Length: 316
Image (cartoon, rainbow, N blue to C red; front, side, top):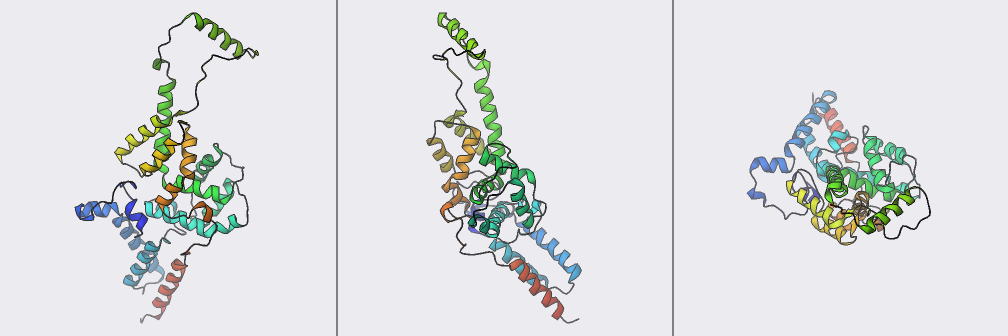
């Protein structure tokens, strides 16, 4: 299993120190690394394969299955439920998408949401459109079906959306609750004064469309205090029910702006090179169009061809 999987899966946070594997119970170890899920999938794949090739050697099949799993090529052409089943699967799929379609970026083509969705469906037939729409929202801050974007911008936003989907949903809930609390009329006790009447008159005139100057009116600030929001997110992360980015990445984003909107926070995550490095499957943005050191080998197809050949050559 890959290095990034060993440190970033299940209920283990990426920013935690590596847990001593000998301190885990057998059950916890199996759950942490999703061993049973892969064993069940391998057995199901073998049974499906044996229907057409009954002479297949199970030992050879399992060897090929786990070799492909270790290399990260195992999510190609699989259903979406399997792609999102584990952090390793998600990371592997992101890398496969980059390697398969980076030439589009090299040529400078700009695509819209439906076109990127079509590309994703080439390697995952039932990939959901709504997740691609959420990716577009990170880029354009709105649901922009027809807006065009570069491959690089889409790729890194897509990585964030797919790999940290549950974390982003939770952050959105936290942001909305904090914003409601800040804007609640119960949050402030307002005592009228002599100057209040003048301010109220000025504000009313402004609402009526007059040109009266608005000096002295305290307009609501956009977003939330970054520290307040990030502190709430990090406090929630103690309930580790989902993967979340390293704390150092969140603190770095907090330090760069005193206030932040939800999408400002998400955009900063998508652009964070530290976050990209912690996931560990995509190159830096400056190298996104370079050829990968270890390209995807056609292992899934060549392995099946080898298994089929062995099946045909097996004695009756």
